[in-house]
Image (cartoon, rainbow, N blue to C red):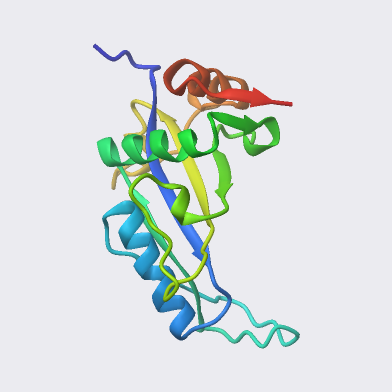
Amino acid sequence: MSGPRDIYVEKVTVNIGVGEAGERLVKAQKVLEMVTGQKSVQTISKTVNRDLGIRVGMPLGCKVTLRGDVAENFLGRALSIRERKVYAYSFDKEGNMSFGISDYTDFEGMKFDPGIGIFGMDVSVVLRRTGNRITQRALLKRKIPKSHRVDRGEAIQYMKDNYEVEVVE
C-alpha cells in the first residue's frame, strides 16, 4: 500500500532533436514509434535564431510522453542500455533526471536499418510524490509545498532503490 509521501515516476519523455523538417524528421518519428510503441508528436520552434536558420513554428524534432507502467518499463530498458549507470549531474534540484542514449539500435530487438540511419535520443524522467492534485485541480489551485517536493537526494535514493542505478560522481 502506498503512503502519502511515496515517490513515483510521473512521466518519461523521450525526445529526438533533428534541427530541421523533412525526411530526417520523419525517420526520427519512425524510430521513436519503433522504440516506444507509441505515436510521436513534432516539437515546434518558439523562437527565431537567424544564425541557424530557425523560424517560429518550424518543426525541429519529435517526442513521446510515456506514463504509468509503460513509462516504468521503458525506463528500465533505457537504464539497462546505460548499464544502470547515471551521472550525478543528471539529477536536478527538483528531483528530475535526464540522460542520453547514443543509438536506438542498443534497444533489444532493434536492428540497424540503412534507410533510417543512426539516431540518438534524450530521456527525461519526472518524479513526484502522491497527492499532487493541488496543482491540477480547477478550484483553489496552489503550488506544492516545499516539504512535499522531491529533492535531488530523494530522487537519487529512489533510483538506487527501485532501478538498481549506480550514480557516478
